Image 1: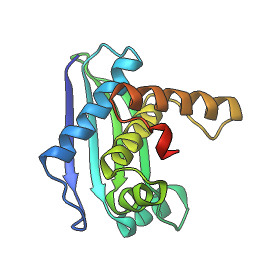
Image 2: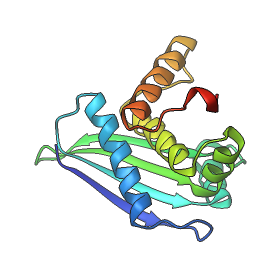
Image 3: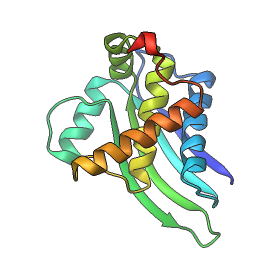
Image 4: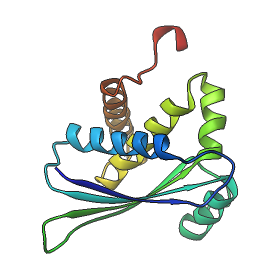
Length: 156
């Protein structure tokens, strides 16, 4: 599987360098592998801050509040057979705050949110029912654990 990710950094509160881009690509790739997507894929990832994601959330979901991550699924296959999965918008500011709140690393939180968003791009939804929420949570946990970023017992 070939994976192409288009990155945009629309914030200046957190470093969005090569290591973060590699982490995000690793999380997307781990999710696609877990879900057995063998086709080539493309994803767009935008790093933003709380104000940026709040504006997007207000425009597209009519919710005037910042959130951690937004997913805009496309899942459209090109003539060449590449699947254009859609867009991920990640608030690095919210990611840092949640990492501190939950007592784990910024890296783990960014990976978790990227996995969560990628599952949304693949059609999963945790809002539709309790069973769907459980299913998505289990998938997220397994993928993040496979990445070596699971929550250790002492962190719970």
